[in-house]
Image 1 (cartoon, helix red, strand yellow):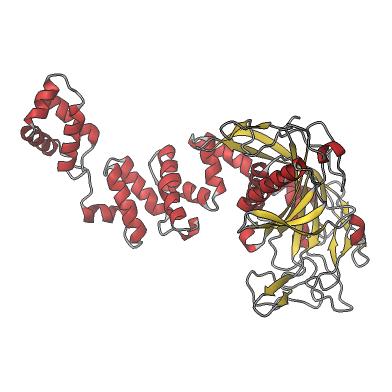
Image 2 (cartoon, rainbow, N blue to C red):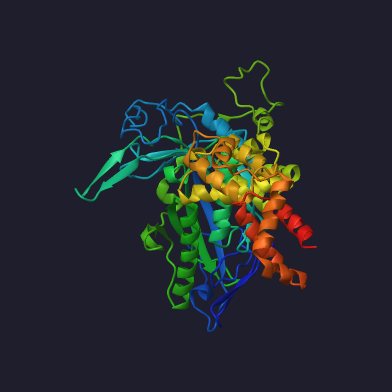
Length: 547
């Protein structure tokens, strides 16, 4: 399937966009079936005169921290920001004679994630040792699943948006090669002042799922959108909180460029990207860097790079290790991991000692794509609004709680939540669960507005008061501030008549046929009521009095 195209138009420095909203001088062509490490072509390395088209190929490796009370092979607790080296067992420290004990919760989380990502779950998987020598890896090797992982051959579907007002326009699918269980390493803390590095082993041995995506993407926006969708799925499943700021989801991006129709170029790996925004920036920068390097007659090195967030560029870290450098070998202290389905489950098996794939499949919750479709159908909201509700952690639950307690239409509720409510949160850098306004308070406010008890400007004023004064309800604020709409017909007629009496010239202009002046009279009447009158009712009364 051909991927979307993007060409650089030099005049006026503009980009001609296809479905992919990436902005760089690249023609996105169909990705190849995979990379061969170090592969390149002479044509790709030597710039062609006047050539303006390139194909970018992007693959991702995602390390997801599993939500579990204990580590993958030990009973040590998993707690963020615990004192250094306070959560380290003998096994985590790799003391002689200690043996791994597999965490059932981590296995179930990997199976659940694999099923949600349309993978085939292997009933038999194996553990391997991957050798490398870092100070924060006490054993000198990592236990992983290189030969036979727990899940393979899946897919992730995501929607790309276009336009200033984001709306889903194109659906794409990235293939998932495999999901494997493995240990996390410790953390090196660099003290530049004292010129020393300290080791914290709290993270050593924490359970990870490595999700390996095939090189089916073409730019930073695609990769960022795919990771955002993966985050939503993991949170819906409860298999990971996927908080990138806390290191619970880290991404390595593999990037290469080549001329369309020619062999794939040499790839580079950008390591440990810990935010979606930086992921997109790093990939787009690396694509453009490789293009410029090749067009200037240079070559692309097969290397590992890091993204400098302050400078907005990638920098070289080290040559890329080949697979043979890791000296993979079977893990001798762990037998094969055997899973069952309903048909293969032994009759006398203890449910506490086996993992049933079919049982986990039946327990899968509603996934984000299904939730979005349900929201559109149930509430009649726009598809882009369903994306916005899910993309902000906790916002969907807030919206649904408001809907349970208000008479207002869903479209009005969604407008208030996505514009006013979410705007206040963003300005103050607050999460949804940190909002001083509860769903009940907003529901009461919207019911007052829907019942025409207050006007739109008054509702905005009440919202501001609710934000500042958490102890008061919307109804109390309306009464204290006297913000109710004037409902008595006689009182409104007297106010409108007084406005007409004070502005005879405007009255004469209307009678001569200048209907635009009516809007001015409406504004004057509303000002006289201090905004406490329904504009439609004011207009009706004025038109009757002007006849």
